[in-house]
Image 1 (cartoon, rainbow, N blue to C red):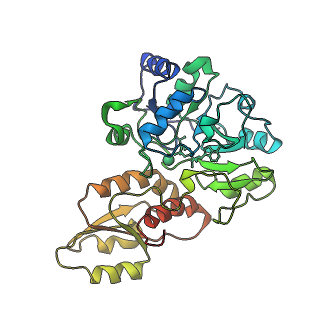
Image 2: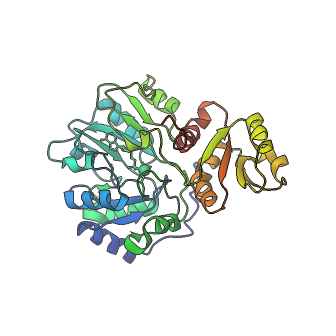
Image 3: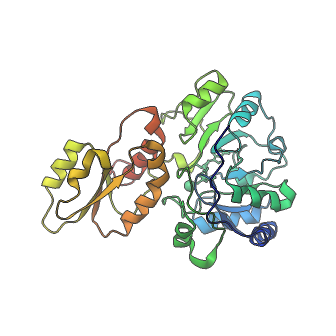
Amino acid sequence: MTAPRAPLVTAPSASEIAHAAERLEAGELVAFPTETVYGLGGDAENAQAIARIYAAKGRPANHPVIVHLSPTADPAYWVRELTPDAQRLIAAFWPGPLTLILKRAAHIPEAVSGGQDSVGLRCPSHPVAQALLEAFKGGKGGVAAPSANRFGRVSPTTAQHVREEFGDTVEVLDGGPCEVGIESTIVDLSRGFAALLRPGHVSAQQIADVLGVAPRLPDGRDATAPRASGTLKAHYAPNTPLALLGFEEIAQALALLQSGERVAVVARASRASHLANLPGIQFIAAPDNPLHYARDLYSLLRGLDRASVQRIFVERLPDGPEWAAVNDRLGRAAAAFLSDR
Ligand code: TXA
Ligand code: MG
């Protein structure tokens, strides 16, 4: 027997959900929680609503957005063909943090895919997301939703984060903090083979186990890969310069600090508690467990922006598959401050 899910501490009322669904049907935007991060939602079949999403985010119009479906919706409606691989991955991981890229059906407006001939689909497991998707168009619609942050910034994992991004201009359904904390795994099935475009909570190994063959991994040389903003090298960046360093390098960097310079050091508590009491250093103890690290990562990066430090040193994490998704996001946050980007 699986453990019952803990009841949500924060949940919008039925009338708030109904109101939010009406706003979506009217072409307005609503931010809502998912198990990964908060999304900025609009009717996926309404090109004007999609245009509003791009405008609010400040995102280039050629970047595709993910279409969110209720568990009762028919994914086949959105695609040219729900391939056998897609059916297997859906059976294994939906609802949950996995997005599939497939060839888009001809009647689906190309606005959702930034002009590409594909569409990204995902069925979230978060109960508030599901309630909203059930209420919207009787559960038959699709809600296009990128992460509810301005382009290039850290994704929001609480309703408060969304308010920090958009103020009062966007209505937010508050479903409490996101459990997964980083964006969904993206698997591209639109080119006749499976390719991992973005690592996430659903691992490459889990996908390989279901498909019987390992997905191609992102290596930056995949020239025919669909464009995906989450796959840009410099992305997910805080405002404060961030460097990924090994322990030795952190010690060297700290020894070279100018007097009065303030830095934050993020490292796993078990490894680096000796740094906690050094003067001028704000030590942030990160979780040892990779799942908890992922859950806390974006909150932590946002907190660092408020910590009034000049630089952030983050402990480089191990290379193992359990750290792949966190390493991916940290690598991009650091890449935003490298001169060769
Ligand atoms: O966990 C998530 O996926 C969150 C929540 C809200 O569901 N959404 C999210 O959306 O991360 P966004 O837009 O920030 O990132 C979606 C990624 C982007 O990199 C986008 O380019 C890619 O998915 N994507 C969406 N549709 C695509 C398509 N047709 N082809 C290639 N990439 C696509
Ligand atoms: Mg995003």
